Structures are given as structure tokens and as C-alpha cells.
Image (cartoon, rainbow, N blue to C red; front, side, top):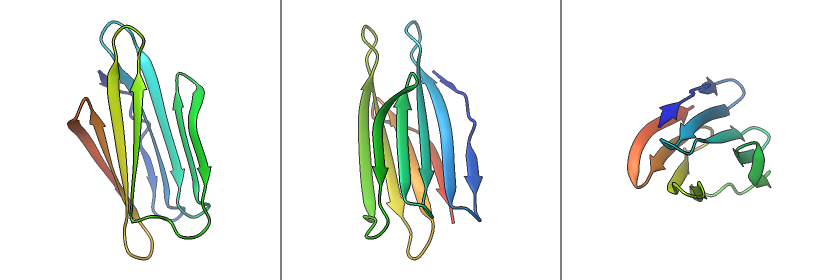
Length: 106
């Protein structure tokens, strides 16, 4: 497993981007893009859109996204997005129920 951490956290734009390569023999690339200011969320696996949402108001306090990647070498990826009061968020990245990274903005 390898972090291709194009991890971008922009305080001013409330933007979060990262990508991670998952798998030992069967490589899969998961990309995560979230813009709190515009309310856009995009999750891709191997350049294929898995989840795309647009939310302008009433962003939930906790949002959990679970994706299973791989055909022969399956891995479960869970991304927890926790909204902070007012502006800002914290993201936790789990692979196979193991916490790998915590990202924050705001």
C-alpha cells in the first residue's frame, strides 16, 4: 500500500484532496476531492467516479463513505468526514479497518 499523497489542504478554499494506491499485487488508485465551500465531494477508483455529491446546506456532522476496491485482492476503504463547527473538517482514512491517516482543514 502506498500513499501517492497529493494531499492538498487549503485553509482559504476549504479544499481537501488526496490519493492512495491500495493493494500489493493488484494496484488500485483511490482519489478523494472535497470542497467545503462549494459543497462538492468526488471519490474515484481507478479514474472511475464512485461517488459524487453536491450539498449546499445542511452538511451532516459525520459522513462515512465505504468503498471496496480490487477484484482478486479486495480491500475495504472507509473515509470518515467530520464537520467542525462553522467551517472546517477532519477526514480519517481507514483501509481494512486500520487507521492510516487523519487529515484536517480549518
